[in-house]
Length: 264
Image (cartoon, rainbow, N blue to C red; front, side):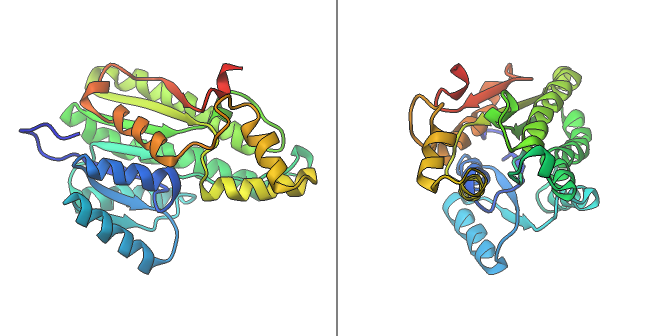
């Protein structure tokens, strides 16, 4: 991530206090990046987490508790990151929320929340990051989509819609900035054992009436030829590669990290 004679890169990773985002923040820091974490959780625990990553990596790790469902907080977070770290070179839009319900029973407020966090927040952070990236003619944007950005699924209308939308946003941005040394890609994870997946398993069990163990196999692993949950670190490795100089010619893509899910 850091060329021998180049300054360290500065990165913002949203939704990074747990799961894929945390694994990504750790990997980027390990490769020499200064990183701003973002997400919810116990502040004392998050401070310990930042200190731990900083101690292991020797880089600067800061934190923003911005609520990305609020555009003004997303914009303020990006300004805060630039003030704390310097111009932002890498933006990983990973924050996401989920709600499981049939379309005719899906709460309006949950629909609005998922659109705000899963899709609109990425627009606001990208918009804030691009001017400085364009000025320096280098930037890496990676958006966490999902296999459900490539196929449909029942009981997840808002999630599927936002993940399809994030892939569309990725492609549009990639075309606009391709001549400025900036890439924009999406990763599409399959079933990664994260807190959001644990909640989905419980919600799907309630909706379907199946035991959670059966839901895991029938709903989440049945279409994955590898038949195993994906470690967050494997997704983080893919994201980190897309953020590297070696990935300069990869842009506008939606790359599955899905155990073969989308080969069906």
